[in-house]
Length: 282
Length: 327
Image (cartoon, rainbow over all chains, first blue to last red; front, top):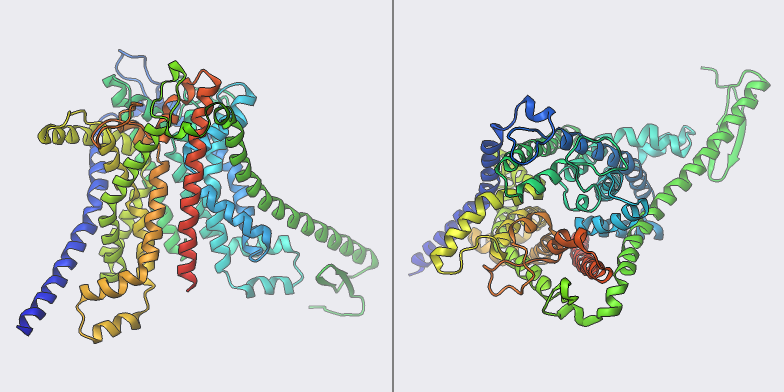
């Protein structure tokens, strides 16, 4: 009787262990399914022609996604130029002022910003930049994406700098260095690995963001480099063409999906590798 | 090195004490002093810039809230509170009721949560308790984190091309109208997308369970499962709950993937297989088409509700995590 119950308990324990393992590895299946499917559907569409041409009108086969590629790069570059300095400086502020009241509220706001749905940011950017400037523009899209980048850059900067030993800073102060030089010559260079990985993660995140661009950058079927005019971007192109009824456009969207997916995964994996090399905690 | 103190000079400004030593001539000393003052000035400018940055973040968030409130005032004024449970949404007839979208959001998010919880908790237990070290768990951990990295528009496209036909097949087998797109499909996609949030938080919480507690239970003859069920899970339940809350916040605000597979009809969904709309998807679909002031502002009010709900959920989640990690 006793032995039977012990055996039952051990069996139950093993049973649940196996169940946990199965469920845990089942999570990977959708990711692999998506990867395999998109590689299969997209790889045949990608060639040189696909990368350097703009989409053809409905009915003509061929065409490429050059406008979306260029647009994505421009919009992300402008967003980074806006967000990275602000993000890093705010991160420095938060790590230098851990107890002040302003820092508490600032930290709270960063937390809030991190959870704001991207579509809401799109609405706000519409009223801040699209309406006053009189039309959809790439610049407003960049601003919306910059707002999405901020919390990630700030958090990673703050967390990285917090971990640095105080003795580093004290040693620099003891040599008579002024505060800004201590920050830029000692603290930031030591923590650059963590800061950079935060920046790259944020870029990876906004590369795939579509919702804020719907009402800001809007999309444009032609090649455009004008920041004050609508601009196409990869996720927008995928959304518009994937929901269209035309097969040619679906093909373009599959190719674009593959490029977007590879780019985002590359950024993420690369970031993981450098985080491991620099031994930073995120 | 020449460090004579006799032609050294001591300057004092706010809290920093600086020694300027070993200057060769009075001019050199003067230029040193000048440089020192310049640096002190730059220092205070820099400190002020940092404070301004901190203020900027607060202004940014308050600005977002204010913009949403101001822009949704027309609809709050003309439609009032009953807007939220109005059952009909018909902009052509000027009838605005948000209940179909609230219901669609709640249904799809909670269904997604229900589907994803067993998986995310399994990942958390697997990585936190059974196999915290080794290359295979490492691989699993990184792969699960990559799930969060895939852009939502790609989930949507994949869902549209692969998942929707499967769901349609399933629907025709169980005897409901086989549309494919609908709340069930979007819940499935959402469930996959939100697994990493609860999983990674749950893992770090489970790893924080003090080993004396577990060892005591093992010492009493508990099996591995009994330790997990009666020591690890009760100890981490608030942390796991916080992780689930954060996933819920993600699911509520998710736009693109849902928009692509939910079917986009503004009729109250009759079952979980029916097409519908969520708050985020109706904004994405109709925002640029809204031609009347009240229509636009009704959509923005949905955005405001979405903003407030996600803020509250995230704040509660963060509170729980903070309390847990400080204990």
